[in-house]
Amino acid sequence: MIRLLLTFLLFAGVSRLAAAERAPNFIVIFADDLGYGDLGCYGHPTINTPNLDRMAREGMKFTDFYSAAEVCTPSRAGLMTGRYPIRSGMASDKRRVLFPNSGGGLPQSEITIAKALKAKEYATACVGKWHLGHLPQFLPTRHGFDSYFGIPYSNDMDRSPKAPKGRVPFNEPKSEYWDVPLMRDEVIVERSPDQHELVPRYTRAALAFIEKNQSRPFFLYFAHSFPHVPLFASKRFAGKSPRGLYGDVVEEVDWSVGEIMKALKRLKIDRETLVFFTSDNGPWLIFNDQGGSAGLLRGGKGSTWDGGMREPGIAWWPGTIRPARVEHSLASTLDLLPTFLSLAKLPPISDRVIDGRDLSPVLHGTGPVERDAYFYYRGETLFAVRQGQHKAHFKTQDGYGQARPEIHTPPLLNQLGIDPGEQWNVAATSPQVIASIEDALERHRKTLKPVVNQLEIPLPAE
Ligand code: MG
Image (cartoon, rainbow, N blue to C red; front, side, top):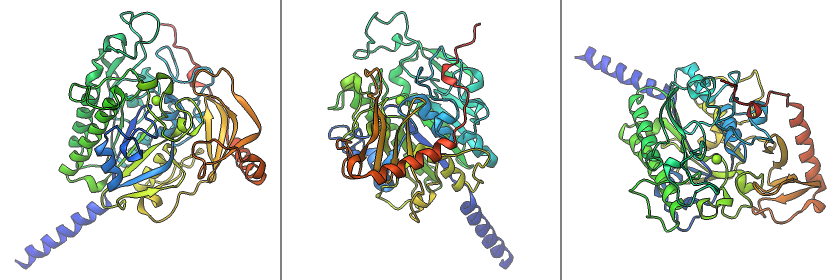
């Protein structure tokens, strides 16, 4: 009897130790073209996002969280590698993103989050929009992901001959207007899928992956195709939001977030899982009510005004993140890779420059993020630098419709703490701030090396 008791106690101790030592799961939920002002918890008055609001209430909401770039492809390259996209050749002034006629993609020499986590045998899946190269050698399955299900680029690409001629029909979209491929791993399983069903289908794939891998460490990269235009909501959400179709779509993405949180709780792995929600770039303002809102920030998608790159950022990890934290550290999607490696107790990547910072002290509530400066690129050109609360604009250009950048010498300077809408230039009274930012920029420039521009490579001839 005593031996039995001892065995039980030993077993209980070992399993507790194993649970404590188990590397955490990571889930990144990535929206497309969602603005800083588009969620209830970031102040939207009519878009109803109870699940994301709860995620923020039970977790941590970042106020100063930035995407790695102002448009899709470079932003995703930054998230996946922890490096400014200029370092991997995934940014271009000529072709701002990858297109179906692009021949380039994220080079094999880059280390993605998925590839890095394979050192600890994480199960890995990518669901949704990839946009880092649609040729086989660039697909998620060649970049450390065990599986892929989704559309490899934007949902408004591959315009079909069935679409009306002329203006892009975003106001009354039909799925058949876009011949986008839906892929499973490396195979196209459908063309022109019913986009009303994308969120439910992606969500089912994500839930199946979580369920299957509940007893081992996993990494799920769940990149929604929405609220990028054309907008589609399923029957359950269509016509419900006072914000119109855009609101319906954001509310369906919110529903999907809730399904993930519910599954983690049901499987009792919520305390072992860090979920991070953010977006790839700001709202696509030129589409009016079909685009989102950057709230009080200036500009939107395509620009280096804060509205183009400052995003909702919400981290949820019950039992680790103290509930209802509001975090003001200057943080970024670049930080996810070093943060996950640190939390998985893997060594940092040391054979190349990693621009991201380890956010684990922030998540644990033990300290701030150490970051000297943040660099804003439009394509491959540096436009602005933020240091502390100050942001210097060396160039400015609207996301769309302004042919050439305006060059500022000396740079425009905004104090974002006082002026988050970037209205008032304080350069004249702060020359020492500009000098310090110029020093940081000089140090940054010294770390850059020329690389092949992947966005400008044409599709090889058949
Ligand atoms: Mg986008």
